[in-house]
Image (cartoon, rainbow, N blue to C red; front, side):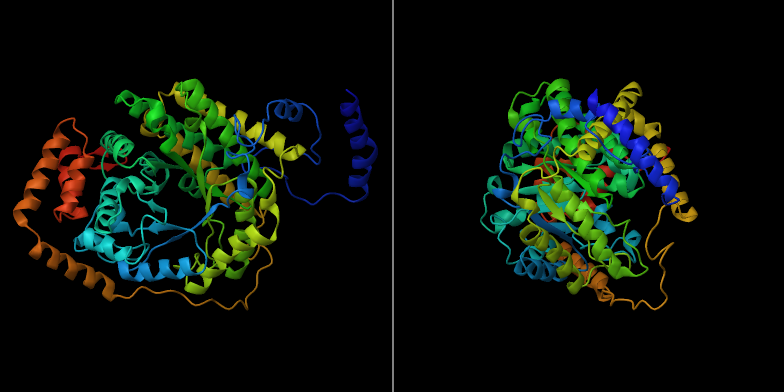
Length: 551
């Protein structure tokens, strides 16, 4: 009680007179999820409750980190996301980044690859190699990883609707390199539900897509035991306009749906839960973001142990990759983005991420140039080696603001999850448009705050400058698309047509039944069947999806 009285006395005797003499700035101090930020956090109420259940690093509920030593033992993986043009173009960028100290690979695929279209499909016109690398068959994947030993690097692939096919191609490359697939480490995003919520690169209706997701779970459990079978993504949900609470809530709702689908398919939770990983955004609201990451670990521990009865300690450990936010980058005064990205990267590190991508400052204008990509990587390295924040686990743990924000975020996420359960779970909620509407409302609120000046974005609605010099832009060679089309013609001419046709027929037959589709997809890519051909066959069985209708 003494602390409470002291706080009241401070407010009346010190704070209030100060604001009367010099009023506070004319703005509303609040979180991204629209709650007031008090002028001072004190050791009252929620803080004391949170401290009593805080725990230690490496111990449940993992609020303070998943490893006892955290970064004293091993730094996070510096995994820069890259991909553009042809496989050869992107391979050169990977070699460049690895030579400058990157410790993991992250593959960005172009839109045709994400949407299951070969480069020579008329619907792919104008998009081949534009926002990522174009991959349609085994030779493309071989060229992408030429000279990069897959048993010595971990690879993350941001791919969803066609995740099973890209993973099959990756395994084919490993076998060509003489690498045992059981030794492969990395992650395939494979998170289709968030595509219906926030991103839109879906192909099949949700239930057919979920089958592919859980088939990949089961296949990897026996064939790729060190591979993370899904990266359940809050990043794209956040980029679509969600606030910090919605990012966690909708991500965990999707995670619950995936785990339940796998359990319903006969997989024991402890057989696959340790292979689940997550992907979150890092916003420039530094303290709020640190609290978000800490709350996420605590929530996941409770979900997987209480809701699903996992008993293996490894099942309850939340492992996540973080990317600094693209939507916070501005085309105006683009070099300011270096500062924004640094703050966001620091939030991820202080929050205990396992791997991190830092955006390049020129990404609001185009694909990163080599110089911008190097600066983005150097940002991580300076944080790692010069800031000293990696010297102790959970460096902000115990801070009044951090602990109360962590508890507040956790409570609000559970409220969202209860609402989604009432609607019948994530899939039913998506079909009813609930998360989509919530995100749209949040995005609208944010935009209105920018337009009215309540939220300041330096260089956009405040501190503008007309004399900023635009940085150089990376432009994709127009000949990339034609080269990809030529390669496809050559592939189809030289492959064993009968073997390819047989493997496609086997896949279609399996899709019409209940067998796991991964072995059929692996066999098909090995026979030279292209990504677009596999997706055409699956469309014939599952149909295609558009909001409000399936055909």
